[in-house]
Image (cartoon, rainbow, N blue to C red; front, side, top):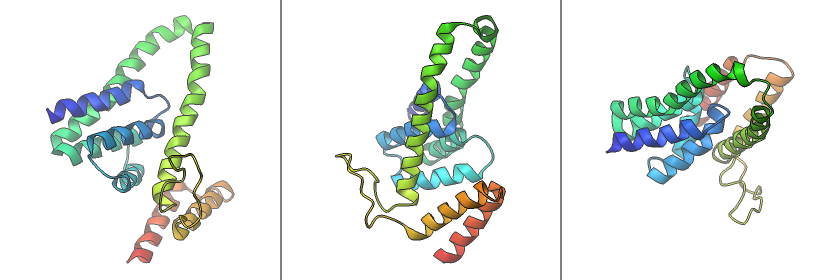
Length: 189
């Protein structure tokens, strides 16, 4: 039964998510929370791990959640569930795209999907910020922003330095990820 639940959970995420792995993260987190598989802190670590391992973020996250919930079989079922809808949809879209590429209806659909995708990615940024840069939720249930006494100083410094190093000096994100891991290892030990 666990395998069926995992497959269906990730199949739904795969079929109803647009915009790639980061857009899927809020849906994965909500599902993980509903299943009581892991805490927000554990999920934040999962996101970091999904970043530094090869492959798409959503597939890595699904694999990790499945393994965490039901071992190697759970990892396989979750990965298959999240990847299957994309595989089928890409084949279907490629078949019909050439025929309907000038369709105003199709253009309107893409026009609506793009801002929703940006919103989903922004939601993932807020979630990751809450668990990585802050010591609690950024926005309370009353939609009041709580910044005072929540800031985690070292992660915020690493965050700002990363933006500067990538944006201004064009340093490779791989080098920055390795450097940040080393800094974290030395500071936390």
